[in-house]
Image (cartoon, rainbow, N blue to C red; front, side, top):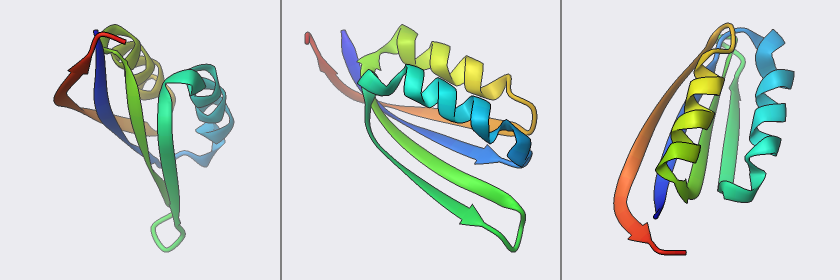
Length: 84
């Protein structure tokens, strides 16, 4: 069962950006869209990612992203589900 979710990511260690982009590329088939905002005054980047995937795939991505040094992640799931 596929679910719609939004993942909020804050990158404080810009050295993790390459690994983060690799993970997002790996899960690219599940990504509906993403927006990244560099907040230079604070030295962080804020990224939002909209996903449509199985809950297990979304949770796996969140776990891998959250394990990166200097990266925080939170995921919000919609109640919208699909059999696709």
